[in-house]
Image (cartoon, rainbow, N blue to C red):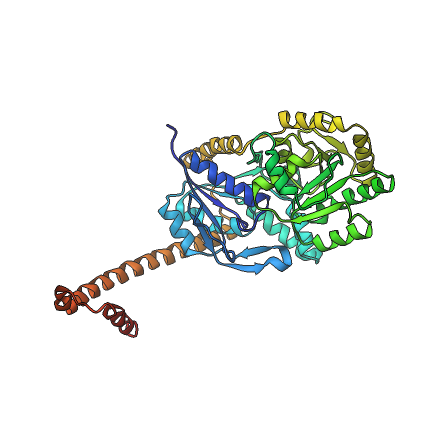
Length: 464
C-alpha cells in the first residue's frame, strides 16, 4: 500500500463557477480521494456556494466580486482559517493552479506547514491581463508580479509544451515540465435517449451536419473564424447547424455577429451547461467540433470530444492541436475563416471522413483524469522527497521574507482563535454546570422550564 499523501489544492475558481481549471481541481481532488489520499481544496468564497456534497474539505477565504469586470471572484489571500485547516490536515504538498491569489496565499503558508509548492500554469495569462487592463504599463507590471509568483514556486508544471513556451515568453527563466490534464468523460457515446433529451428544443434535422463549440464565449477562442466560415458555407448553399455551449463576456457581441451574418436560423446558443452528461450528449450528437483557438494551452474540450469519437477542427501548431495528426486524429487549418470554410466544405462532401477521423481521435487523444492524476501523484512523491533532502533552494528575496512573515501572522491568528474557542468552551462548560445546579430541583421534578436556558444565555451575552 503506497504512502497516503495530504495535498492542498488551491485555485482562484471552483464550482459553482465552472471553467477548465476549476474542472481540473475538482478532478484532482476526486481522484486523489479515491486513491486513498487526503485532498484539501482552498478557494475564494463565492455567493451561493454549497461544498457539503464533496467527499473532501473545501475551505473558502474572503473575496471581492469582480465578476462584471473579469468574470471571477477575486480572492483576498489572507486567511487564518486556511492556515488552521492546512495545519490540522498536516498538508505535505501545496499545489496551486493559478499564479494570482492562490499562489500568493500558498507562498505565505508553505512555511507554516513546511511543505513544497508546485504550480501548474494552465492559461495564457498575458491575454487575460491585456483584456482586463488597458494600460500597457499596468499590463507589464501585472505580468512581472505573475512571473515573480511562479518563479517562487519549488516546481512549475505546464499543461502543454505550448503553455511552457508562453510562460517563457513572459520572462520566466526557470525550469518546467509538462503535466497534461485529463478528461472526466468515459469512452463511448451517450445513449440515444440522453441525446434526444438534450437536443429536443433545437431545430436539428436528421441528416443535416451539426457543428459544435463548448467553452467560454470569448472572441479569443477563435469563434469569429468559425462564424465567418459558416457564413461562407451558407452563401454557397450548404445546409448545416451550429450549436455553441457556454457563456462569457463576449456573448452579447457574438450573438449580434450571428444576426449580422444572417445565421440565426442555424446557429444556436444553449447558455452554460453544468451537467456533464448533457454536454456528453451534445458531443455525441455532433458531427464535428470547431475549435480554432490559439489561446487555449491544452484544449480539454478537444479530448472530451475525442472521448465520444468526435473529431475537431484546430489551428495548425496551436496548443490545442498538440498530438493531433492531420486526417488521422483531427483536421488542421490556418488561423483564418477562409481555411476553415475550405476544410468544412470538403468534409461536407465526404461526411464519412469526419466519422473515421473521430474514431482516430478516440484512439489517440483520449486521456483520463485517473491516468493524469496518477502521473501527477508520482511526481508529488519526487517533489516531497527533494524538499525533505534540501534540493530546492531557500527563497531569500525581500518579497519571500514578506510572505513568510504574513504566513506567520496568519498562523498566530489561527492559534489565537483556537485558544479563544477553547477558553470559551471551558467557560460555557462551567456555566452549564452552574445552570444545572440552578435548575436542578426543577429538572429532578420533571417540570424544567424549556425556555430558562435560552433566557439565561441571552442575559449572559450582555456580560461576556
